[in-house]
Length: 136
Length: 129
Image (cartoon, rainbow over all chains, first blue to last red; front, side):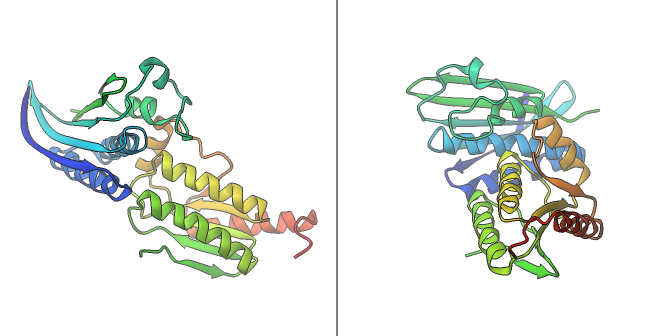
């Protein structure tokens, strides 16, 4: 797998979430995602960016354009140094929330991505990786 | 500070969201609408989201909150103009937009909201106004 282009954005304020959405919109459009697929991945990015702020105390988002076996896609990596997630399995359940939200963020974003991975160490932080490929 | 305009049209408040809202702006809109509803004694809220290219869980929750709050203040809420790709994404995300009535465009939304207000009136709800 080859990373064609990468950029890193701060994710600290609600304005930053809008910037992440815009960058993901531009990248997915440049790769040639359909309008529906763009919207799905931008929405997933918005959910995880907000989690990074609300649960992780802010962090960074790395946005990469990928090329693998003739397929093109976009990978998003959100990292924070917050308190981490104690029980990832529980956090992945629909409707489970510790932050007073709807509990849609993680499970909903997973449904909107082709690949979805959460790594977290309590006390050290969380890393969420999302990939969506251009559908052929 | 940015602000989303709220217009009074007949018995309704009309809000057209034309920008990619950050969360604080969405919260401000919710507050502004509450005050405007009381002030104007409007019976309906029509929210046009045809310019929104995304509705995530935060914006979805804001729309549900507005509808719930309007209900308590004796007003009906109708959301109009959702783009097809936004609707598809909302369903896959798992959001149901509880308590929200929708219509395809502003015209149909106004017709629906007026019908809802008239139906309410017949039952005597909100008679104190």
